[in-house]
Length: 506
Image (cartoon, rainbow, N blue to C red; front, top):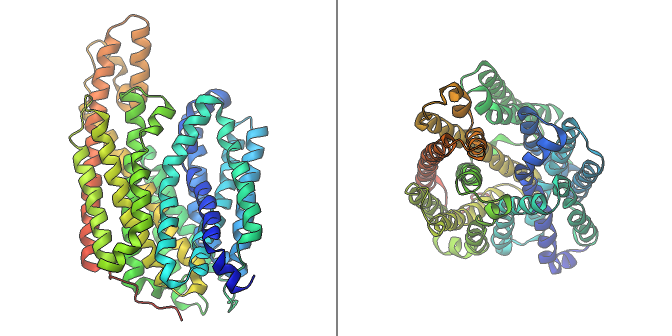
């Protein structure tokens, strides 16, 4: 495919990349709302349900750098197509044949491998096919798709479970991926590192160990405890792998990820801004699914619909942020976006059980608008700070920062919520024998209270009210953490993020 044809088709190519990206992002969360159905149908316990969710995120995040490097070396189009095929095949086989939780966990791990091939390829292809003067706009649209993937995933999961069954959550992937594969076959150009540098297998191994260990310790910390031997041990292992990776990459002739990239303020600050922004976003989304369903009594689909103000704010902000950056510079726009996120979180701290949804909707809109102003310029800055022949690895590093930030947000936000819930819960007299069970799990407290009410025991209503009030206390505490993180991020960006990339690709 010649350069003129690629240039003419660039917006159609962006459409295919966006479709592929949304598939990856929505699979991060679609199964969250299907867990009750999976639990009943597969007789899965809490640990198995947790791994059904975590297998995808852990494999996806752990393999990102390696898959990005493979795309650079052997071809980004091939990486994209193979990754999509893996996700589609695993989805179809799971929906058709899976009868045990172990089979679903294995399928989710395979889907994670596919996703790790797809996501870096999408951004690196966008960077390669768009000229520098249009790259900010294109990356802004890409970032918007990445940002709305999670809310769309909640909608898709809620719709599938309420109208069909948990298998539909997997079936949805198949026709969308088939369309993306067909369009990609004809539209997406082949691109790779033309210098054909040799692979870095030791760096690949160390990166998997580092990212995998770090993500595992973060994901499992709320279950095992932040100071448990397992959490601290795996986190220490992740740190050792990281140090070994840095040392190796500095000395090897052809590093997978040149460490000097991090000396670029655009590259480093872009990654930090993205990571902390996703911390806030995923922490807030995690608490709000529980809030809408268990405090306000909405079904899965109704709860997901209440997230819509977030993408409605995010999409226009991300898609048009390039104009604002051209006028005011990256640091000002990103810090403004993060300040809006913080204001949204501070507004949310005034929420009570009786608060009207409109106030919560404003918080979602501010969060989305602020995320749009943050993600797109930060991603552009990261990608403009590195040479195009390392676009896959640069994209993978960008994606890894999102995964780590999101995992930290859910883990820390959930831990803060749980800590304050346990402190605030007033167990009604007569239910002292259930104290540990009620404090350990808000959903369990709501379920037990509901069963008691249905049996005519009014202590259940008292328990439900107390549990809801305690949950709201924890939710507000978690929002304060998000606000502090966003404000800290805004200050760091204002002081240290450059207005534009220092590296200029030849």
